[in-house]
Image (cartoon, rainbow, N blue to C red; front, top):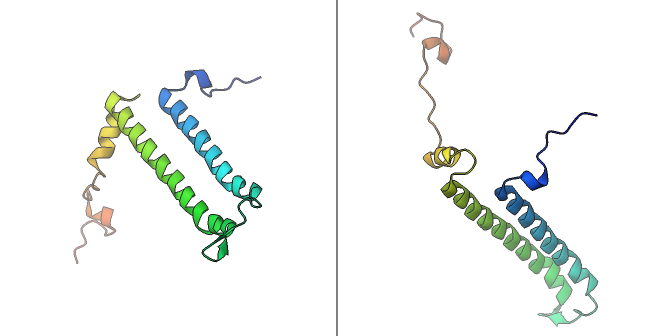
Length: 123
């Protein structure tokens, strides 16, 4: 039987373990925010500004909660990325330094052929 080349969970870098734990936690929050209002609709059956409260939860509360989840994930991962870059990471921080330097401008064409004209042909 062929052996797997996947890294076992016990040998993964701390960065990825933290990332997976955060994703699992936020998925649990997302699922509870999605399911809980449906389960407790009878208990939330009061009017809020002329509409049933479960309507307000579905129409405004859930999308706002989802945005908070996404924003929290982005904030946490930006913080983890900065911490990983500060420690040097697996590649000595070179990838973080290259990303911070910005995009590399394209090189100038080496010859007129590179821009689509045959060599020696002037316009």
